[in-house]
Image (tube, rainbow, N blue to C red; front, side, top):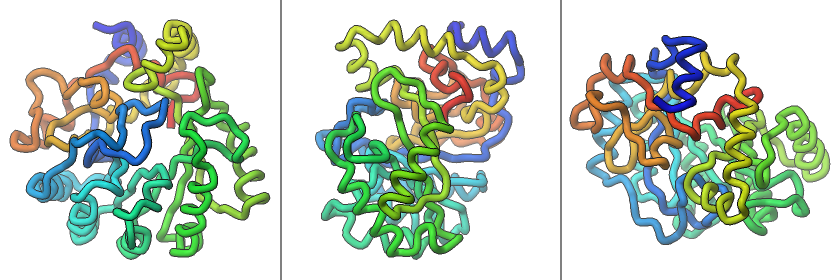
Length: 308
């Protein structure tokens, strides 16, 4: 049993298992137009993993059977996956509330032509990752601030933040080994994006960097991996355990396998042994009450006020 699992067990043994599926996350593929230094999936333009159109139909059928409060589509850059639009169409036809995660710059790629209007027409809410609140802020995504602002402006032109049915939240990962201070980040973003640039959004989501994937290699290269892992352990907040996302969500990967979350997927951890592991074995009752697989990186989800 991992150190994190022991910590959870000591606080609430019931938190060792899932309790429901409110959110179904779907990772449609790992190809991305960028290769960010903090990416837990190590996505890049060279990745080829993608969800087949046949599997898209199976996943949509499972989503309809689960009827979660939210479908959360991620990648890679979902915008660059051929199955994205067919998947959204099927989810819309099933009247399932859907969110897509975006790095914003992918919305400007040629392959995403017309996608912004398509997302708006299907009332897809967005969680948009920003590199910072200004061009001068240190970023793990390179010089992309202007492109991100341009994408946000196009989204607003399509109705996002202006139409109450078109929700646009902004996500931010701090640079380096810093833990996110949500209140400070929120205040800064509201001033520098809203007041200075006229860019609107609904809510800010502060995400703690996960010491897995490319972020792990970045930390190892700088000699900070051990220090960062210890900082996450030291910031463990027992009050966050009851609200761990993995306890009320499930993820389907591009190959149809199940994981407890996108971070476990990136770490190579599928659902626990004895639990249906592929969409072809789907069993709602078993998956809803499955034991959750915890690991070292899970401390990032319980640091301070929790991640996300």
